Image (cartoon, rainbow, N blue to C red; front, side, top):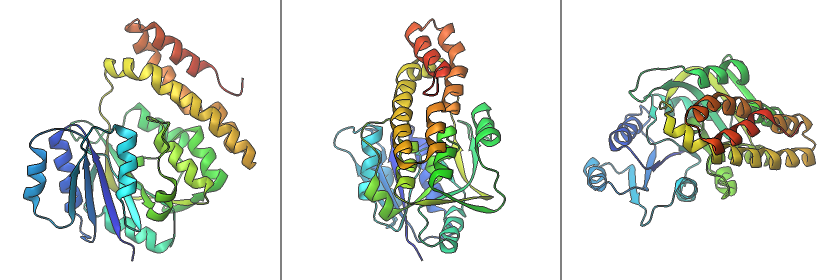
Length: 299
């Protein structure tokens, strides 16, 4: 059977990271490797990892802060296994995550991506279902009972319309992941870009929501986050959707190209953030959000 790497790019809350690590080491299937790439400077972290005394754990601290995208790329470069999970440093695995995903890989040999069942938790670890996740589930995610295979234009059009995937929970076929890796020019939308790149390379995905085996932590969005995201987030998204629509057209994936040009979920997201930017009188953010929400490549 396939071997598995859990790659953990770390920066931020020490306690939440430690909980994430414990959830990996508590897997009922113990045949795994955990690689933690520390992009921070918290002084107690190296000693904590040394004290774990578990040969499955490999810890390294970056000499200089690499930032999100470069640290993700480093995770891919340091991965070795047949299948790779790049989980968030504040997310949690259920004890049967690996057993479940390994079973799906065994049932679909050579599958490029596995999206297992996910539940969303808040900053305090309580199961939560906010607007963003209800929208994903009701408007954009395919209705799946048991397992479903998706690939090519069908999946590309689906995720470009609205990205309903939970990136940190996905298991990636290592060989395919290492050939493609994350693009250098995106820092917010790099997960969607990676999925579409793999679809263009001929990879497929199995989706199985029959068992919830991953907890994705969604922190409350603060007013400061609204201010931070209001400009660069949607400027980057618009640039990506324009570029990928042209690629989809060149490939003959007309439905995917149309979905990219309309990018309805991204525009809806910008619309929901407009009131916060208006309250803060963030004029540049208001302009960026309005431009993204009310215009598209279809206009």
